[in-house]
Length: 506
Image (cartoon, rainbow, N blue to C red; front, side, top):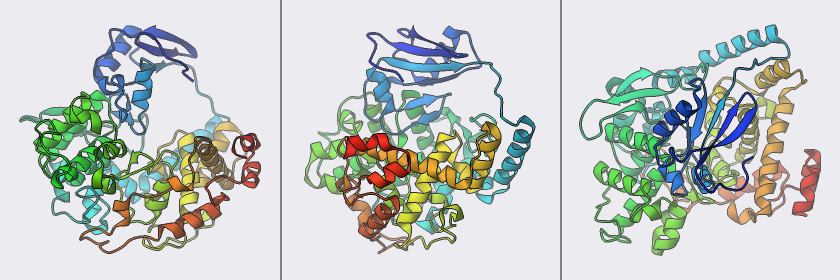
């Protein structure tokens, strides 16, 4: 826990359990890659992991993020601005102490078996070959890639920005960035010349959606360049691209003009205009200063009909998966502890595909059915919370279930976990997060979806389809054991061992 704030720029140094706050005056103002390299040099420890903020975090842009190890992002919710408010430029962690498991020999064999299950999974195989960008290749069939600020369910240029196209054009090498990862979904790309010349980590699916289909931009090289800028300056690509798409629709509808946008003509598909506005956001200047605070804030300032197409939940722009393609996303987004988020409930691996037997869901649901979605969302949120708390990638859930995680934890720690214990741990996490939000005023009234995703897509495989959201929410609350106004009941809190929370809510 880092409390208070510093009078001058600092970074936190942690090495083998020793921690100290050190001066970062010469690091402040630098991009993330520069800051990481300089902090490592100052500490003299090359084998270390460093998380930093970029210039946008320093300038308190609300959609700023934290970047670690060059391009991995703690992207959502504005953590970069929070660190910037504390004058905390970064955190370095190093150490060479041994890591022991409870049953060392059995642990190594268990890891080998689990890795075998992961690498044998066909979805994992696709991620390894094409990265998360493979999702853009399936978009024409599913209508899952939000298009033209969530208006359309079809586009004739998804292929231009897909994983296979990336592999055939700008991919330089496969570059696993997570230690000992068996999935290795990361890409390293290079644009050798032209206005978008760059080299570095390739754009993920979410970035291809936010700066691509959401803005009708089919120029892959431009998206790779924008992704690089977002990494260097430290900003969430989902929120940044979503804000620009929102502004494009406002420009199209005449709510804003060139006089408002610093002379930038925000026309759909114009990658030069998108890049120009992104630079405004990154530097926290002009119209970009408004967009950098997110679409909810921007719509409140612009007024008029702009709130009708500001796509967010609780102020957080939605990720690039459409609830009209898979109904399970809707209830997940609406009830996520941090707003529009698919990581606090990685439901895409289940809805319409398979069940979760350990949670009593034995069969795959129809992706457009309403019944059962509340129960599914609850179960997947619980499992996702347990996975994230175990410091394991959510992509492993394509191959591993709660029983696999329980076995691994039992051998690693000596505690006798089973599958139901894993789900109960996740349920405890979700209820504690909800109680925290309740304490700050979150109620059922906030568990809603934006108007745009409650309106049918234009064209595509999901045309005319809209979920019965209220029915989903009722089922979800019942499955959770929450009151009608969206609070964990006293009975549920006691059942989960969260008795200490009751006094804050009742």
